[in-house]
Image (cartoon, rainbow, N blue to C red):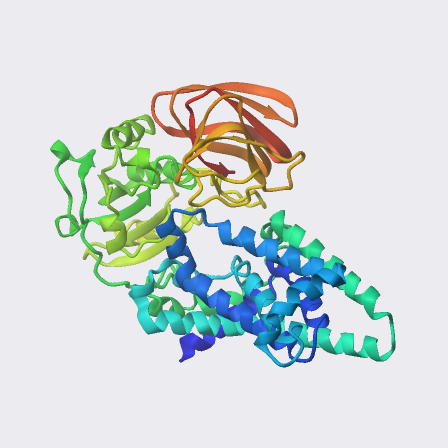
Amino acid sequence: MLLYGIAFLAGIVTAISPCVYPVLPIVFAGGASGGRRRPYAIIAGLVVTFILSLLFVSWVLDELGLPKDVLRNVSIGFLLLFAATLLIPPLGRAIERPLVRFSRRPSGDLGGGFLLGASLGLLFVPCGGPILGFITTQTASLAGGQRVGLALAYALGAAVPMLVLAVGAQRAAARMRALNLGRPQVRVALGALMAASALLIALDVDKTLQTKIGDYTGWLQKAEKTCYARERLGQRCLTSNSISSLKNYGPAPNFAGIESWINTPKDRPLSIAGLRGKVVLVDFWTYSCINCLRTLPHLKAWDAAYRKAGLVIVGVHTPEFAFEHVPSNVSRATRDLGVRYPVAIDNHARTWGAYQNAAWPTEYLIDRRGHIREIKEGEGDYDGTERRIRLLLGEPPTAQLASVADTTPDHPQTPESYLGWERLQRYAGSEIVPERLVLYRAPHPLVLHTLAYEGFWTVRKQRIVSGRIARLRLHFLARNVYLVLAGTGRLDVRVDGRHVKTIRVGGLSRLYTLVHYSDLREAELELRFTPGISAYAFTFG
């Protein structure tokens, strides 16, 4: 029951986070534009479709082969239609007439209100923490009743601030009507407010507000990140970076389902049992991941400094993109990157699953008895990890560290942006037509953190493939911009209309550096491709 309570509070936090701001005027306008029961109908519709979107919508879209944003676009269309009913009263009466059967009360109280809320429910998901991530990433059969219960608790929590706002708007509208303040003018104003908010959502402003305003809700999400909550969601509890008292997470799982090994004697497999007596650092990585590449210098420095003292680093390469499944590509990347410690090719993610891993990179520090003593997700705190390595090795605590400059970004920047239809976000161009060569158009200028295709592209599940006059535009905030590319051809890089350089694409499919600055920049990037190049994802630094 405590976990359901945490989920309820997490829903409340989601509803007051910055990326929900564009939804709030729609709730206000919807609550103010109907009768006494309309706010409750709006919230009921929001809760129902919010739960359905959490539990089933992603699975249904996958089964039908549809892009993830198709229902979002439909919802935005409905919101604009509702706004039109307020701006044009005859249109509103014509649309509301069929809804009378929902209630003996005016149709706008229940039928129209429920449909308005239902449209909002499909948009109201982007700002959650670990609990929302658990609900949306597990299949319907995996967690059963607990998953449904968590979704309901989360949705009800998110509904509370919305209901307060809708009821407050309805009462404010009632006072205005009592004062004869011009009901037609108020209705038009509410319609304009709703239309403006729907347009902001269509332009992905909801997805950029969190970056613009800052994450003031982060401290409210602490309950979601407690050991109690994480362990009951089937996740490991990431705690204790203490030098003097390392948490014991229990025996480390063995390496499972490894296709082949690199940098072991005669490419023989390793095992956790066979490494007893050594201190082992297991690093989950993939060779086109910029976060992993920024971690590599530290891993290589530790390997050089502590291998003779008993440290064994094992890189578990669990691929993200299709080309990373090719063992020869991994072998070549390992060689080119100067990785000399053992690398396990985990193409079927079985070792990833055995460790309940969730991110690249993640390091698991294992003591001489084979027990996990530290779990670190992501970049940073390298000195802390090295001190814990030294502690487990029995090295003198005052000795100098194998220091390497920490290049982890500490500034706001554009989020990682995938380009295939499966995980496409912050897209601002013309309608996506999956798996077909289509002419795309891009708006000018682009909103910050958005991207768009231009010219002829084939949009596939994980990547886009360039055709004739292919362009890719991005409005970014970063010091460095990277792009994962495959194929053979040429790529011209332009920033704010000025040619910067030409990149030859060929050989190993990998991460390419597009621009590199010494300070933080906001600019519009334009990439011009020759035909036949595949682009997978932008990352930033």
